[in-house]
Amino acid sequence: MEFLQQYGFLMATMLQQGLLGLSLYAPLMAGQLSLASPGFYALGGYIAAVILTNPAFAGWRDALGYGIYPLTWLLGAVVCGLLGVVVGVPALRLRGIYLALATIAFVEILRVLALNLSITGGAVGLFGIPQAFGFVDRWQYLWQFLPLLILTLLFFHQLSRSRTGRAFRAIREDELAADAMGVPPTRYKVLAFVIGAVLAGIVGSMSAPFLNTWNAKQGTFDASIAYLAFVLIGGSRSMWGPLLGGALLTALPEVLRGLADWRLVINGLVLVVASLYLPQGIVGSLGRKPKPPIRPSAPPRDEGPVGPPYTPETL
Amino acid sequence: MDLSSFLQNVLNGLAIGSVYALFALGYTLIFSILGIINFAHGAVFTLGAYFTYTLISGQFENNGLLKGVNLFPNGSPLAGSAWGFALSALVGSVLAGLVAVVIERLAFRPMRSRGADPLLALVSSLGVALVIVNLIQILVGAESYSFPDGIYGDLPGALLFKLGKKTIIIRTVQVIIFGVSMVLLLILGLVIGRTRTGKALRAVAENPGTASLLGISVDRFIVITFFLAGLLGGLAGTLVGSSFGIAGPYFGVTYGLKGLAVIVLGGLGSIPGAVLGGLVIGLAEAFVPADYSAYNQAVAFALLFVILLVRPQGLLGKLQIQKV
Image (cartoon, rainbow over all chains, first blue to last red; front, side):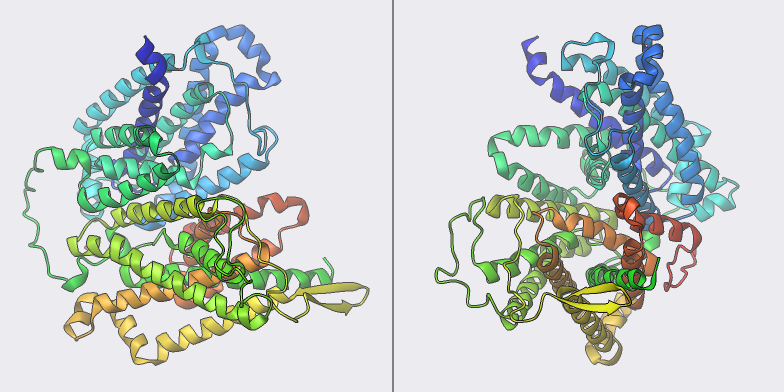
């Protein structure tokens, strides 16, 4: 019990960040680098925060009791899913770094809106968000994040074995070839993007009570990059990678707490060193060697001292 | 909107837009050679401003490990005259360029030689940015610093023009920012377009493999590119810092993000595109009505989003057709 008192908040945060890593991993399953997750996370959180604090929803809160919390998750999921379709359909015509930049723009636009609208509490944000289900300790939020995590992992596991999962992989490996084989890339890419949006939205709406306050700092470019680091450093080829990356990189600053001011410097160094020495991510380096592809890939071409060509398409 | 406020907006827009262009050129140079975006560029911008500030004032009185250290106990010889400021800006920018070379050596070259996923370069350059920004904070604190008065020597603070009943204000800083940026952009254009070094740079950008076969030392030109990018970024930081003050270690982050909008708007990898993109975004921001100025920060990203959907290759970029 004492252990939970002391480390429960950190553990719940680790799961929460791992889930956000997974929300960035979802579009990556279909080969799409989207950094939109923090935008959907912030939106989901604002939906929950507004419903839980705004006087306009007092009637709902009285009528539903604890049922209001699952309702905020549902609304977060639905709104983020719909917005995901609206943003995804035009944006997923873009490839590689262009999609990444478009999603950075999306996150920034949402952030500026959140800073300036009155319903989101402007720069101050919304505070005094009640604890979910009358929780008295932060560790109890494990009851929220752990089931969501298990469901998400089961969902991703089933997905990867389904027709949709195979279509995702086909597009990830070679979009043109997949298209030629009759897999419609746009539909599957939007689907993968929306899965990530819905997951980030639910995590956001669960996190508003968890963090007690919600403001525009929840959805920033820094967060985009943090989640990307979770995925790349954990390993981008398996769902365990983002989870492990999210949990470890969240715990790292806490572990380094004794170093006070230097911990963010060390954190930056870890990112540099890990990208240099663990290019496959932690899970990729631990796991079995990937099965050799059926069609042997061409022997590595010598591109001179610069390595492979860095065209936008290789991103 | 009457003529005088129109002209005032144009002037403001051109001044800030030319800084965006100067800063974004660093992104574009590196992107055109390596095809990656160097997210540490915003940190180099910040460093440039701090380096110049150090040369001008010699001390950071607020906070951090360097509190109480004074580089020039008898007052900086560079303070108080326009030439002193010019020299400090030059030295500060060169130092920023050298830092960019170190970043290339530590974070980009090892990855290139391993043929790593270019996405990892994003993460590692961000790691570098995190290190730089937090080192600045440890050394000199998170406080903002403003350049002392009189860095432009005897030049007047602003020029006033009468236009009918209204007055147009042109701040000296704005003229200097615009002039310096345009001269540098012109020089850079000439170097890249007309000299042997520029030709080699273009060859490396076009195809590094072939360039190295033709006897061009690719690594050397990558170092030159990073130095130029860092120099331009550091100078942009100095100019912004001298105009609005240095708002703490994180003040490059906003510019770092806006720079992305600039290069995409102009066309990734296109040098004239970066200039055009910078000016367009600067002007667009200047024309946001005062009532909506809070939304100013979203203008660049709205433009970025729209241009990606309408014309993904940017205003001046070339369309790349995906081949099998």
